[in-house]
Amino acid sequence: MANEFFPLFYTFHFYLFGLVALVGAIVFITRKSPVAAALWLVVVMAALAALYVLLGAEFVGMMQILVYAGAIMVVFLFVVMLLNLGHPSELNDIRGKWGRLAAGLIGLALVAELMALSRSAVTLSVTLPARPPADVIASPGGVIGSIADPLFNEYLLAFELTSILLLVAIIGAVVLAKKRSA
Image (cartoon, rainbow, N blue to C red; front, side):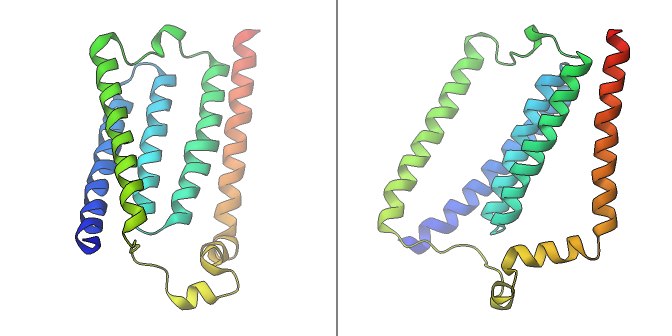
């Protein structure tokens, strides 16, 4: 039973999160409000993080959430609020009873999945997707070290230039917002 359930589980969720990412990206580019678009981009980033976790790259999935869906989206929303590009009435993307009904049904489906998974996880043995090789895990930095070592050695200049570019963009947004209000 366990061997039959988990490949189906991973395949279903791979397609589910892929569909969520595609639909979220389409909705993201069709929004008129930059604030609503930013929130849909967070949905896309969360779906991509879930795909990374399903593929066995838990660290990359968590960094996707922390860096992209967390930090960069906060900076983007901060800049949008500074420039006063959004109107509060444009924030509500779900209008009418059909949108609320669809959101409720999706929520119920996710709760049902979680309950089914929690019941089956107790009785079934979980076989995770491909893990990192043993030599990567046994290395001094482990899995994170294998990512951090090239980042802070070979690509340090590009990493620092990206940091400076983001800082300049934030300062530019603040300067533009101050000129506009003066």
